[in-house]
Length: 96
Image (cartoon, rainbow, N blue to C red; front, side, top):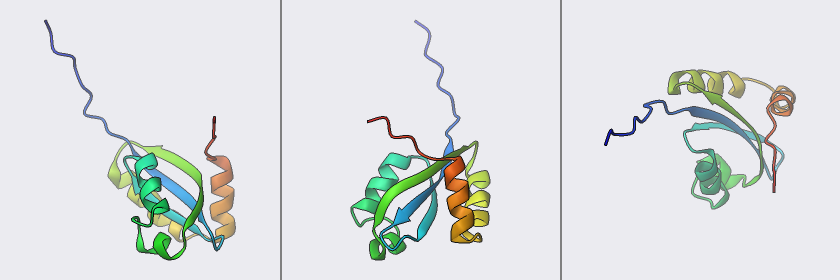
């Protein structure tokens, strides 16, 4: 029986989180759900331990870590207004 081929492709994601003080945290990960859960439980980044998350605003997929990290850096230079406009274009849809 032939082995199933597995793809080496593993996408990276840039994500934006709105925090309790209405600031926006930007990060990258390969597993958005797991990373958001870490932030929400106080085990994520130092920033989100101090400013707990309210909700996930946006998620954008990239082919590799370098592209995601580059975009993350760019977004972190933006104003909150620019980040919110970007998030509106890439909003997370909750199907629950």
